[in-house]
Structure formats: structure tokens, C-alpha cells
Image 1: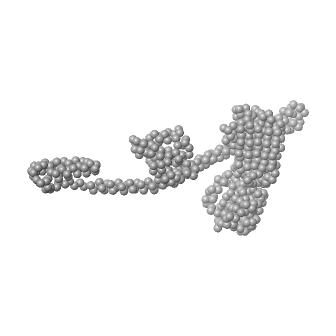
Image 2: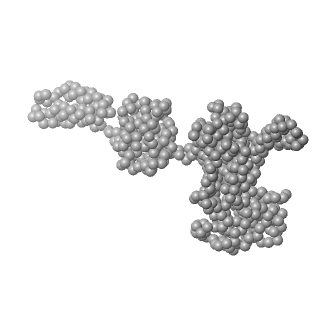
Image 3: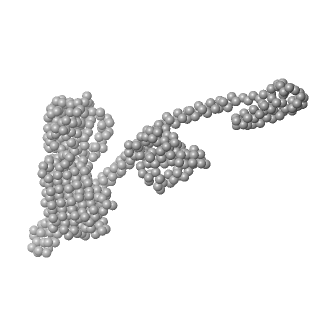
Length: 584
């Protein structure tokens, strides 16, 4: 442009600039493009408004208000800061994974896994999985969905840095739904406690169902056994009278066979009766070797043709237990071994007894048919048997029958009644070894037990009412309570009536009370009488009765001065519980 511009030329230039301004406004979303257009417009404006010498006469400027953009940028920075704070402080684990590599992790995720942020960042997610199978999501559709689409929720397991397994609820979302290569963000919730609670609930429900089933079976079995025993007594009595009067040898042998089968039937019904009763152990001291020998003597006829080997280690302490229950266990185990060897050419039965680690062990081993692995977990189930019509492999002779209650009683007497242990080793065609272990309970505190007891504050020289009808147990408890380090003054009551009379006439600091007592007044009656007289005196129940154990929870919730131990009780458990209840 030369010379002084005319008005028309200026007007035309202004319109051109207005058009440029409009374009600038339309391009506001791109600040760089907007700034470039503004610069060009400004230069053009300067060129267009000059005099003949080229000096500017005026400036035409465009001013753009970018306050909102600046505010938006500030809000975005603040929002990003808030999101980062939430990410770091979130109570659940959060992370970002790109191509299975951790790129971001928060503090909670580090806490859940035991790794630091530096240790996880840049690592493969494989580091958290217990095995390749867990990592590769074999056979799991939900895992496949996460791998293929980046989204989903699934329960999984992670391996903590210390090696422990943690249950995790994992949720995943892709950062870009159209491009999984940009990574996924995930949340992880530790559900280990929940899973443990669910497992405990499942086991409790299974136990309750099993107890209910056993109770029903026991009631039916007990009623039938009692009625059938009356029939058997009639058969046995008449068979034995006929044998006495019979002179015909053939007839006499048949009568003797009838009597033998009747006796076998009686043994079976007695087993059913034992199963139906919830008996509390009547404990006394005896040698386990004597009971093992008695079991062999009782089955002497059945052991004909079987080589019996004994190995009783010297120095085995006496066992405090119910002799009848232990005898029944040993007879059942030996008889099972005899049956298992019914088709073996050279049957051998081995009995062992020894003591180790404060326990007495009994082993009964045979070289019989063995128990298939598929059935080993079922042998303690009431009514389960592999004999008779259930013998699908021909492992037993055809005349051998089974009730299915023998091993159930073994478990009931050893595990439930005596807090013992049973282990089984068996291989088809080679034989079976069953080992039972029972706690050694001495009639005094050992030096180690005394050292353990004095670790806590000892409350000594207190007056104790000991209510126990079993002489052996009462004697042990009396000994450990009256000796060092406790030196209590102990009065003994052998039944409920005596306990009530002694309590009414004397003052005591604590009462040790058995639930099952002879006579019309049981332990619960004694407890109720004590609470009518004294609301605060500590009372400790000792019982193995299942029905009473179920009611103890409700009692202890109402009575803070009530304690409980389930039979059998070790000496240290007993004195520690007494000492604990004496704490003011």
C-alpha cells in the first residue's frame, strides 16, 4: 500500500480484520493456532495503517479474554492433584498395568503384597501369583474376559512377599476401551479374612449336619439294638440249654453254631448301643499294654492261623483314660485287621506300643487287603463298610460282614472323648497300619510344667471345693492343687449332694465342678445352687458331655466368673485355668 490510505481502504481492512477475529474465536480450542493467527493479523494491521513515509498512523489490535481458559487449566491441575492424593491414600489397592507390567501402584497395594513401590513398579504381574497356573487363568472364563477385554471382577490369590497366600477380589477397567495396549487400571481388595470366615462357617455347618445325622442314627440304632438284644438273649439261652441236654454230636454242633452266631449278633448290637450313647469317659490309670493283650485274648479264636508279633517299649507311663472305651477301640482295630487278612496266605498282625513327646502311641498293623485311597476318608463315617455286600473287589471272605459302626466308634472314643489322634497308612494288597496317640497325664506337675505355671502371677493358698466322682481324676487334681507352687486347701466331694452340703457349711474361693455326677443332683444343679448363694465365686466346669458343651456358651456369656475345660484335661491346663479364674 502506497500513499495515505483512503477511508474505503481502511474500512475494507477493518472488515478483513474482523473476519480474522471471527476465525480466532472459532479456533479458541487450539491456543497455538489462535496465537499464530493473532500475530499475523497484528502484523498485517501494522502494515496497513501507515503514512507516506511508512510510519504507523494507528494500531488496530485484537484482545482475547483467556481468563476462563486459565481458570480451567488451574482447575485441571487441582483436580489432578486431588486424584493423585486419592490414589495414594485409598484404603484398597490400586494400580495401573501396561502389557502386564506395573507402572503405578498405591501404598495400600504395597501393604497388601509386602513389596515397596520401587520393587513393584516395572515388575511383571507374575510376581504376585503363586504359580503359572494362577497367572495364566487356566479354565476360568472371568479371567479370560479380563485378559481379552481388560474389564471384569474375579476372586484370585496373590503370594505375599513373605510367602503367605492372600485371597484377593480383583476388578479391572481398561484406560482406553478401544486400545488395550494403553493399559488397564485395577483395584484389589484383601478378602482373606472373609474367605476364612466363610470356610469356618462351612465347616461349622458340616459339623452340625454331621452331628445331627449321628444323633438320629444313634437314636434309631440304640432302640433297635436294645430290642434285638432281648431276642438274642432268648436265642442264646435256649441254644445253651439245648446243648446241655443234647447227646447227638451233629445236632450239638449245629446248636453250638447257633450260639456262636447269636454271640456275634450280641457283639454287633453292643457296638450299636455304644454308638448311640453319649457316654462321658470314666477315667482311671492303666497300662495300655494290658489292654492290648486283653484284646488279643478276647479274639483268640479269630486269631487262629495268624502270626502275632508284639513290640511294647519299656517305660511306657500309665494312661489316664476310660478303660472300657480304649478296650473297645483295640478290639475293633484288631478285628478289622483279622478280617482284612482273611484271604492272605501268611497273615501277620503286629502290635506296637511306645511313648514319645508326652504321648502314648499304639500301632496295629496287618498285611491284609488294604483300603483303597478313594475310601480312606470315609472309614469313620457311620454305617460305611467295605465288607459283605459292599465288597466289590472280593477282598474279604464271603462270610465276613460289617456294621459300619466300628471305626466310627474308634474315632468317637479316641478323638471326641479323649482328644487323641488317629492316623492311617494303607495300600491295597500290602496292608494297613493304624496309629492312635493319647496324651500322657501324670499324677503330678513336672518340673517343666511348674516352670511354665509360675510364668504368670500365682494365686496360692486358696480354699478349693473339688467336685469329682472319678477317684483317679480327683486324686490327680488334689495332688497338683495342694503341692507347690499353689499349696491350695482342697475339699473333695464325690457327688452332687455332698458338694451342696460342703459348700453350704464352708467358705471357698473357687469351685472345680464335674458335670456328670452320680445320684439325682448333677453338676449343673450344683452350679445353680452355688449361684443362689454366691453370685461372684469362680466356678470351673470340667466335662466331656456333648450336650453340656453346647450349653456352655450361653452360660459363659451370662456369667463372667464361669470357666470351662473339656475332658480330658492336662495338668497344666487345669492349674492355669484355676489360677486364671482366681484373678480378682
